[in-house]
Length: 354
Image (cartoon, rainbow, N blue to C red; front, top):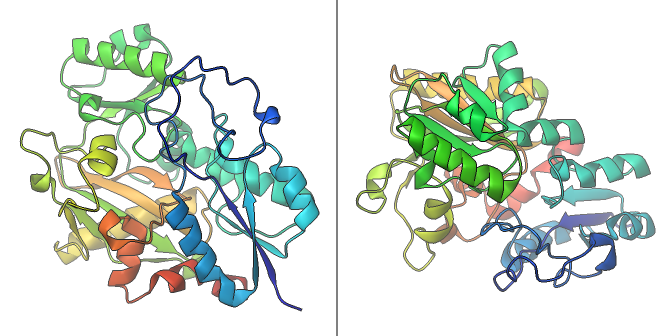
């Protein structure tokens, strides 16, 4: 009998979201991606974490040789869909929408129904999305990461004792959401203004951390336990950003300045760096991967401090997997540098399950 693979996903809306106040009521009232949209939050990047149809199609094509693929859109009726379909395995790329545990919703439902799934479990996904808790775990495990505070109010920003400059971003977001050129704050006044904006826009605490002025890298990791391995390191060339832009890979760089028709040539893979630095980067990345008990794959962002010591910025256990090389999706880019095709990357879990 052919293996039945459930593909759990969230599809990004084709058009810009309707402005706030458009009348969205409850997710339970919506049955399709065109209507399962949240219009009550004033976030310009609300659906940035969700996948384009081209990515979902590419993942399905990669999975088809392994068996029957059943699309399971992770909207309000996902538990009913999953219980009815009862696939043998769920390939999970669904980011979710509601709450700080949203990335753990699909695997939690899979566990409830006793259905195996790919990638990390609900605890790891929720920990990684909560940037403050993730950094606390890394600190306890000796993984280098920048000093930080969680600002839950403007008063917390005013009382911040970290030396400037600092970097401010939402505590529970990914895909560059809430990270912009204004995230780099050189004065207390700038910090207070940015924290006020982020608190009112994202309605969640703001992570404020010591700014790391060194080079930035991202590291893809595949596998589990002692078999986990780093893919070739991706380096960032900030000199390729628009003139005057600070050295930050945020929302503008990911989704505005980097366009497939005119891609930013800011990625170098493998990164041309000294062997000692490469070893330190891999050590930090693997330390974070194991500290949070990641599974199957993850992309880990690294930035060096003023002494060129690699610090873990954050973990992405549901990494972007855009199939078009012009989109500069870093995990597929690193996989290609390692000699893997896109389909081989997607089917890696098959080897891990054997």
